[in-house]
Length: 218
Image (cartoon, rainbow, N blue to C red; front, side):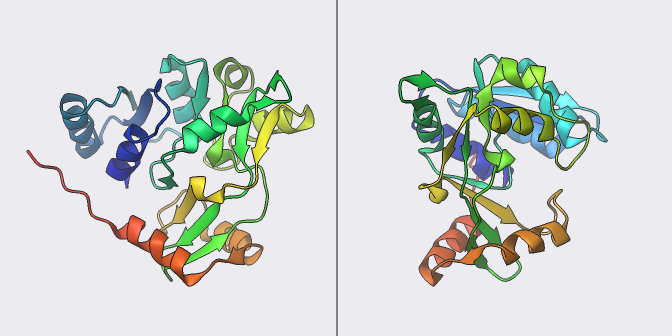
């Protein structure tokens, strides 16, 4: 999924962007892939090596310190990102003449690989979709843990009304549960039990995207 996630970033129609990729220093396949993409594509890649046992929260904090942009956007490598995601989230920052500090996609799609089924998630502050001012993230850094690592930042954003919420575009983001996620299966079951099954054609379209093979030609 990492390769497809990077390609999806490169296909975003938002022009000024860079992708900061954090990976364990023992992960040679990822290192080789990033070197290949750096040499053979026009994707602006920044590579950040980390220790193998680094938590998700700490890995994100380290990656953010290397980012050059005014805004940062979470880009999980095992999920699906629509090509208009960045543009629509940036556009959502402008609300009634005011520029918000962050954007969240409040309704997303979910896809369970085990039974090839898609769901419309219930409205929530989905941290995996966060686009936010970099300086604000540095003030409220991610916790040094693998789940709920963004709680301090999300609490600040929501309590103070600093985030724009996108409800009408769930297609912008699909969270894929494949069994190797950091999210526990019990947590995912809790989420899908509160979510709504989508039409079969939507499930089939997502299934095709998830199963689609991408070849690297040397």
